[in-house]
Amino acid sequence: MLQQTQVATVIPYYLRFMHAFPDLSSLAAAPLDRVLEQWSGLGYYSRARNLHKAAGVIASNHDGEFPVSFDKVVALPGIGQSTAGAILAQALQQRRPILDGNVKRVLCRYHAVDGWPGKTAVQQQLWQYAEKHTPDHRIADYTQAIMDLGATLCTRSSPQCSRCPLQTDCVAYVQDQVKRYPTPRPKKQIPVKTARLLILTDSESGRILLEKRPPSGIWGGLWSLPEAGLGEKVEQVCQQRWGMQVLTSEDCSAFRHTFSHYHLDITPSRVQVQATATGVKEQDDIIWCLSEEANKRALAAPVARIIRQHAQSLTPEQ
Image 1 (cartoon, rainbow, N blue to C red):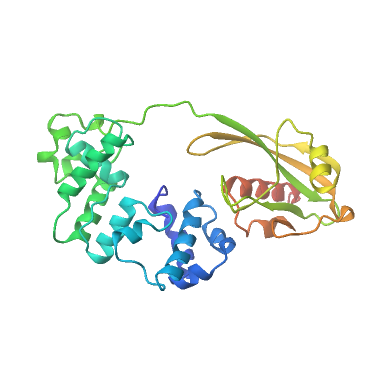
Image 2 (cartoon, rainbow, N blue to C red):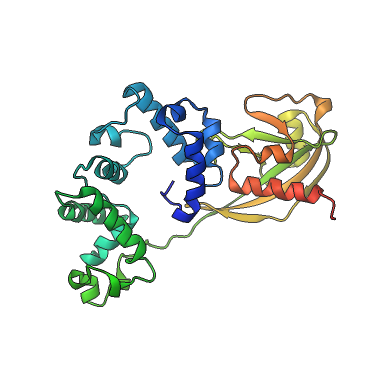
């Protein structure tokens, strides 16, 4: 959960998640839908899918016991070299270097390493430094300390060098070049994509239609509003996909949701349909539900936002 999400945001999700899945066996046995429901709102849902897969692998291939060898840990879904090292260092006191974002920043400044840390050559150099500095004793203390150093003092924008215990030997500090390191990622134009999300509403019951997205890709495995292209006619889409007759349709204000590699401009469309008459039946990947029921399911944040706003628009002002 702490990969790409801040601690303050994670805490309530973590407590809720651990209450739902108190041990590995309960997580492995849970349906993916339930895991995604507990993760809903944290984003980067591949982390939840990989966590669930890893629990299943441990349950089936390791007799339910978390492996203790590096090769077996790093082979688990969603666990890379640094995460595997951190787990084994902190849980089992194994001498394993780590290289998360905070540690990269500390090492880049301490050794004045030029080049964006995402480059293979720079990353290899940082791994060498990480290996060099990892001690033979108090491994867990060191691993936690160097991560905390980057998180609390050697921060990205306002490093507190005056309080840092490493300042005497830090090359960047000695050279008064702290803000130069680490080298920022080369700027790249982020593409913009568009999509229309359909709030298909049954004119008789007021229920809306949700579809489960494919297991891979954005929002993989989550429930979502049906998607259509901005150039497509809503009436034609509803007729061709579900055999539904559109009574009214209206586009709402578009908004932008940003992923790590592109912007998505989303246009919600309120579409009232005659669903009951056409006999559109619920399936494993399609359901009808009221708005308040929909928001209890595993939804991506932008989809949950649209459904909430839709529900609020139906509530008469007091």
